[in-house]
Image (cartoon, rainbow, N blue to C red; front, side, top):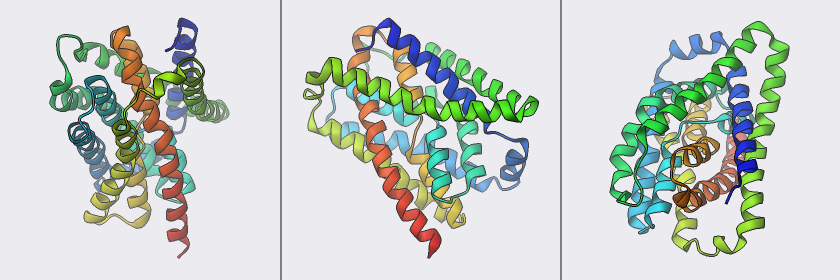
Length: 286
């Protein structure tokens, strides 16, 4: 699906994306959120609790083939990304909570993601494909380096951090354009091979995550802006990171099919998040 040049460009874009995420972080934001940890804790429980469970239920209930099921569960296990922060901003939700959830879940993912995969992905593995836990942990640790670089830029040069933040947002869009564009141009016929159940699973995952995230946040008494932030942070997972993990850790013969549902999820969640943002903004005005 992707050649060496496209893979190299994808790696570069992800580096810029994660640096931009780190550049958004300020110490005061962490102090504010840590002083009110309820939102952070329910957000982490939603990301690493509801999302993998939903993906597992969809994979089993819709009888997805192993590679498609693994791709869906993998993207459901990833932490939040900068896209959720962007939609949180437009939704007039709790942006400091969203950003803190993003970076905290990225750090926690080093331990939580392999653990959750061991529970939910193992039933879909076999002799042909397994879960490369060591490689996944290494990839996640490497991801934290550009985040740390972005945080350093924020302290040393706010102007440079602002530029890194802008470039990171652009890179996130380019990742999706690169993957979807290459896939459509080179492999249009392959998308016809994705079963209808795969499209259903990719569309439902983000919507169900947002609904359960909002419900959990409401149950613990978060304010409406906090509920909106948790909902978006839960439903919008870091799909570019899922692409990177698949391309960096799984065997080439499994990569193409494993990428299908994460790519579909990324497209569908942008649509569902846009609708949720419109509803949240209307709610904020009422």
